[in-house]
Length: 425
Image (cartoon, rainbow, N blue to C red):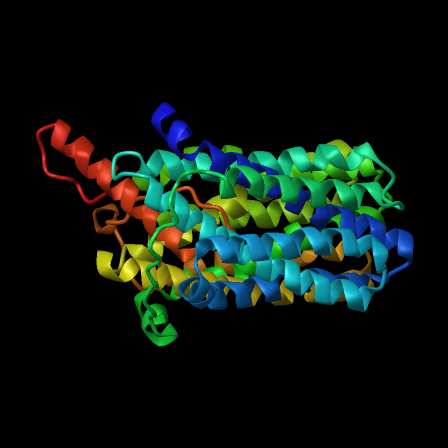
């Protein structure tokens, strides 16, 4: 671990500062939109812009890196992020905000791809798993801490937009001044969606549904909180609870997935998510209850993401995993674009409870489909060949591939130490 910190501290510190900026802007816009009098429907379109930009960025950034290199892409995208964060306050118009959200989503997607390729190149086979785990943890810490910064100023003014802009600008200083050389960039192969669906229908359908869940959580939580009258303090705690749940639940669920089967866990977690959303709609749970729901929401959705990637990889050769990961991430992005729009439409028709009802519907749909798939194809624990890897929804295909390979290498090394062949579990 110390070796990883010594070699990658600049990148890890920079990514934490970046996530501070990203975490602030997502929640802040929902609050400021309410102050500006934007409707729920308008804010849903604003929030969907980020996911549209993120999807385009994931497809276009590799070509940009090949043409001009990591450093120029990194610096250019960072400058755009910093500029947009300030322009939000200067142009409080929902159409302008939508365009800016597309730009900032595109830029963050490119930054993640660039940073992850840098981190992967700086790691050895022995340290890659630790490096990627630290990277994911630093991302989550940054987003959680960002919610606390929302209480540092008045959301109707400029200061809360200036703070993330400054943090993002500072984030690139340690990274770009680091002595680590820019890595060679390798393009991830492509897999047709038909072939990917044939390999794992549950993986494809589950990723699409989960994209809507993530978009509602991370795009519409602040819009919901503003609609129900939460204070900035209470809303920041609520959003932080979602990410805290995602961080805390990943590893115990990963441990369980290798012992009771992935589809059983996918079904069980989806049912738990649906019940939690139903409770938020039907019961007078108050703020404390909403915080519990938030922890469960994040604790269910993040591990489900990792489970679906691992489950899909169970039916693929190692050489196909990177291409499959890219396809799954694209499907997830398609689902994410529609998430805020449908959530906003439901909130406009039935009130703030539409926020929870939409996610509850998606969790229930995933549970039903997982149960149906269990009747169509028999899978045993011995069929599981891909190691469960804790992943962030923002991870690029490169990070997913590297993390999965690191877990496979760790499992093989552990088996060799025991004097046995790797168990392919």
